Image (cartoon, rainbow, N blue to C red; front, side):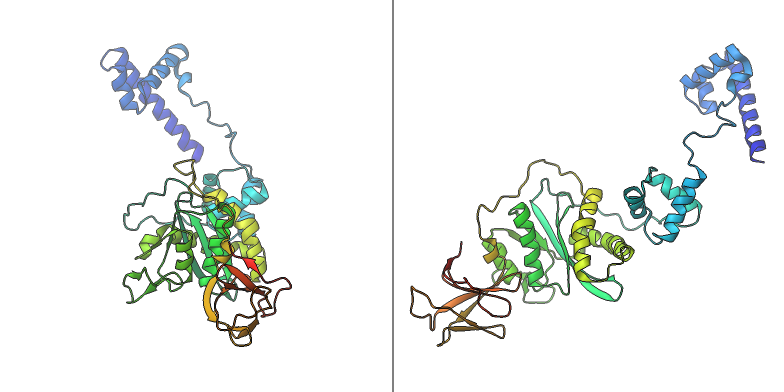
Length: 395
């Protein structure tokens, strides 16, 4: 039936051409008008007319009819793709599946071919377009001008709800730091900052929500207090990095869209790799997911220059930490976080009794006690002193 329909359509096309051709030959129509009637370009009509003059009606036949398309996929290739999606990757978006198929199964076909093949088999449904019209905020022109940080609580693996902390560059959308923690807070924010600054350098501005570990807000939903700074704000001020609060979810659209992608793709990938604990998930995130994500989604910045500045020996460990003041007790101890930290003897002072000192809590849970710029004790997370943990100058 299909061949009969095609033959009929070709016969009608030839008959119509002959009729128009006669009208052109008798000067009732020009070549442009004839081309418009036949729905082709004037150049193509002249080509058909020349062929008809030389070879007659045979010149109008479609030479492709009855021949197999050389680009047509073999049945075995179609079967491989559909079986792969059904058995291993069902539920993934077509784009996500196509990335895996190219990377892991050497698929040479395009995304569009993959989409149409899966749709023909009824394995995926086209998404409906819609939603309000919004104006896109321009990206920063160069890397390091603005960074976004946010956390997303989600059931990343079956039965386990973790927070994913992401720090990304506004200019490129590149993830510069990402890791899972049990709960988002001050230490996770400082850790994200530390990983970025240690690897790339200092940057210009930091865009976050108004969570309590980022800002103090006197009135719910009101303006942030820019004078009373929590630990993250204090560290950013010391590093001369501008901290920008977001006042609406739409203002954080770039990071929100990023998390929507992670909640779709990352959950499926962790399940595919049968990862169930946080250490393995963080390793996969660091070694596989983030590099692949950046390669797939990061964009080229407007400028090749960078706003990142090297730290030039700045002691970021003693800035990106929790800093709190304490008074030394009569037995040269400091009570901190339920622990008793014993300050070792010093050749410079007989004691530090009643001195006001600063206790730094580092990202690994260890502690340092400082008297002014001088470190007078370093301690493990359990409160035990480090063997050589005294008399070090803070940078």
